[in-house]
Image (cartoon, rainbow, N blue to C red; front, side, top):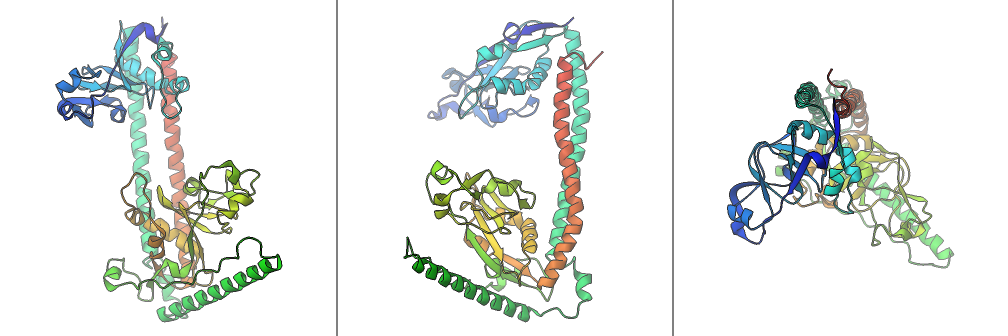
Length: 468
């Protein structure tokens, strides 16, 4: 027969504390000191920090024994762990002392089953926490002790099988990611199109390609100036309201690539060459000058879509959704980029890329790239960023939020080949990577199912349905 008890009737809690950080004699001793960041998995075997006996005596910390159950009540409320070591705890943790015939591992799994319920009962604007009074009101199904042992054994048996399955899925995922990178690497070294290239007899030489790039840049500049002159004429006809339309910046010349720089880059085909991204299209940071950026004045009755880094990161090649829109006031302090722009994140998430499916504004944490159509295939650039994302992340300084700047992207070296071959490379990549991406999506779905299955096992366990 199972009984139902309030948690406060079967356990008591002992809270912890933190010795003063201002007193060096309290720290770097031989007593493990646990905080929320140490609570991972089912067992606590070590802690990042240690304190001295003096630190224990001069603070409100409590020391638990090996085998004790520890529960988080603040920051990640509801997570628990069994300690395998004697250790002190901080104020965000509680030692759970059981009263009577309760298997601590049984209670640990009970807390796992109640994690969502504990979060619902927690409160706090910046940091979630649950009060002891709320915890004590949780209802716990309590079967006889031998049944508790059997339930724990069954949970661990099923979790072990589940963990093996997850391990195999993650291994397969890693293998697919490795294969994907090898395909991208081969593509941008010219290896995927080697056979195709050997069948061509009209491909331009590197010198001819460089001339085409210069001619295209010249045409683009002339078009920019023509459009600016038209804007100025319209501005004059309207009585010169506001500021005069700004003249487009004159294109700059970057420092040429040095031999030692080229030697560090991967080898490419003899009829290819490396060229900076700046020369292949328009590259610019988004704008959001007004502060605060969340000011409702920017968005009230807005009609110009506004996206941010998270939407680029979460996009599947194309940004198809937006949550906010700038109004005319918002647009004045920003810039509207055309549909088809390649968005490149440069803060927090480095070099995540996606194409706009609509005209949109974005902040300076995103860079927009619109390639010159006659010399660059925008899909070619999109896939190249996938190939070198890790390399670009290495440029980001190790600060609280990683970021790179526009200059790094302007000087980014692109393995350049004819537009005809770029098109062929994109086709080769899409035919290979579409299958990889399908398999990766399937694996991700299975991993999500495994999380749900884990909770289902726990639910059945505490409903008395897991064992006969």
